[in-house]
Image (tube, rainbow, N blue to C red):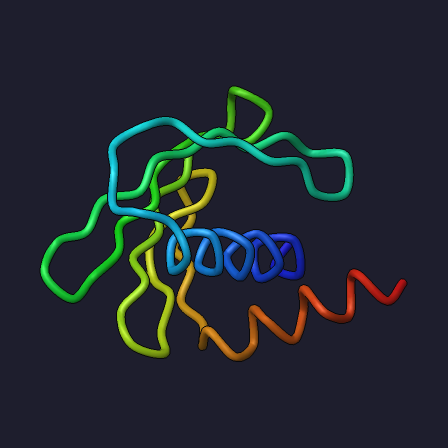
Length: 93
């Protein structure tokens, strides 16, 4: 599960970093899981909130090189570099 969260976190962070800071809903699919989310900039922190498969809630905070927050009501905390590495590994498989 953490590999999925890492990969999803990297994808969210990458999308959040390249899009305008708007409250419009975005979506994408990864490994057969569909994600809907919004991003919001709060100072230097990007807040990513949404659901996976329309049921599993998440809220991630991207600040500097860290991603923290919750996924399916479980705390997550990892380096952004770890997430990007997991995403690259998942893409290679």
